[in-house]
Length: 335
Image (cartoon, rainbow, N blue to C red; front, side, top):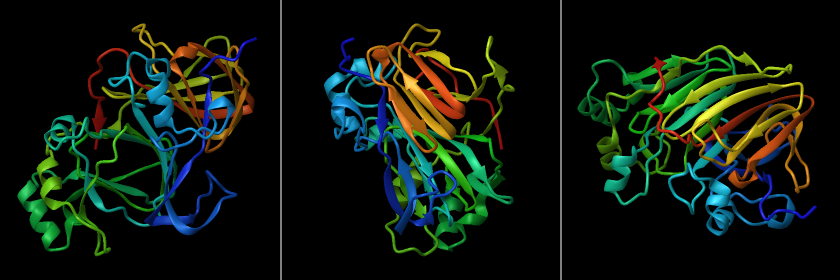
């Protein structure tokens, strides 16, 4: 059988040092120890490299530019750029209080798109919290005053988080992560972050751009979602975690092999990003070598593959992220 040009791509994580990170990335990467504090493990960034097959060593940006719609699918907005960035976050201290622009604000400053994201809480210790949006009635002017008076945390809306929560963070939302959780972030492929407040750390702030990007009325919050459903004819379960304008993320708990598609009900195709959070499994596609996926790994299934099988080795839990083929509203949330 002839190997297709594109095949399921095992991604090499790109570990990014941050002052709020940690040396110990357990329980996701228990055997990795670092001299620097690691805050993020990027899985599908432009510079992330492919680990397997004929494209090994090339970056996702290079492969996206070469294969375009064959890789990203017809649901993606830009044929030449991979649409979604997935990463693990390991906050050991509080992140800066920050905001990302929405699409409209990003275009005003010459960026192609903004940064709306969502956070799946893979692990949370008791008492773990996030800051999401401003407290009821707080204005942008009051936020600016709180930043200058060094008590910006006090005007944030703090939310307790638990393992399994999904948080939607619309562009324009002031936010931060506290310690004690481990997050899988799915976002538009953008790294535009405006840092508003950083607890005295010696890093640049972006007050002018950041305050201009803040929106007071946003759909951000914990996503209200249906209970997981049993997949017919198997012992597998699928949970719809979030369906939003830029991404759809589902959780699969698998004990049996399952065929999946790169097309959704709209008929449009999208690359599928699979991120293992527990267990181990194999991704199989016709004409391609099987790809083993263990906890912490990400596999990108190109849109042109169309049908593929995920075969758990004993059990496997993974997130699947994709671009929706149809226009979707923002999700229902609560704070």
